[in-house]
Image (cartoon, rainbow, N blue to C red):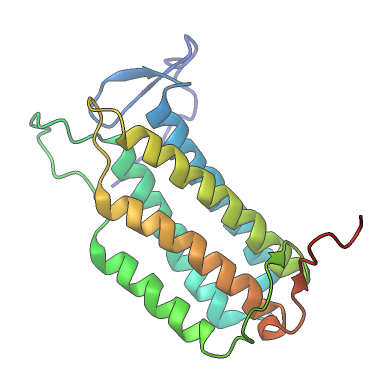
Length: 193
């Protein structure tokens, strides 16, 4: 269990941070950037939940589960699997978490109006906030993919699948809170030429 008695430690004043393995890395390190962006996506979901808590309780509950899972994903990324013994079992994203998000997507998607164009970010305040969270989740995914390309690094494949599915969920949830797609703002190619 996490215990935080003191918030500042001064250990990061030199521009480094500690991974779950005890290793120090620059705060600009790609791994730190990846789990920091996962945290940013989580914060965006928190802002979206300001708009979903009262009117969209089922979606809000789904978002609450995703927020918890995103902390799991951050913990997963903060403890790279380098094959060295840790003395404890690190927290890893598992396939069941992605499966649950897929079920939530299917549940929301069944009532959505079919798309005939790309959707512009907007509509209701809840939808706009969910679209913002989606774009940050996609950035986290890009950083995780870049990190996975480094032969010296390891990224849990289930974590990559999970973040990909989260951004899919956020897109579908944004459409759901936009009156099941009826209030979506659609892209009209070349409209303002």
